[in-house]
Image: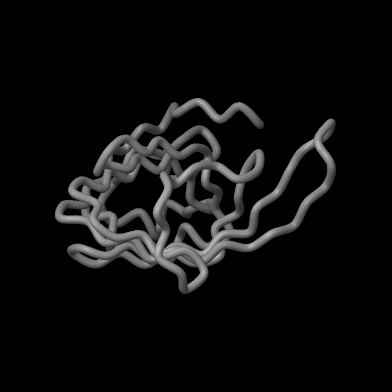
Length: 134
């Protein structure tokens, strides 16, 4: 499966978790629902008919957040995030997020726009990936 062919399905999907360690980042993500007709590669989908898994970015050497270079580790800013836009090429991930909180936390709406440069980008499909908010 080439995740680059399926990035448009992540619009209205969600960012579940971020793990950033040294020069690697793992983004746990879920797409919006995908119909059987659109699943040309016969990807194993979650029980909600979504693509679910982890985007691995290795050799990360630059993270830009809201047009500013980040000097700290990428992390979840709020409980979850809706994916507004995802674009991946061979070495760059562009990710636009709408952050949200769930009760009992105060309601928050915030936006982040990321550009992440990495030497290697790969997708790990995990249809039964745990989402703490479902």
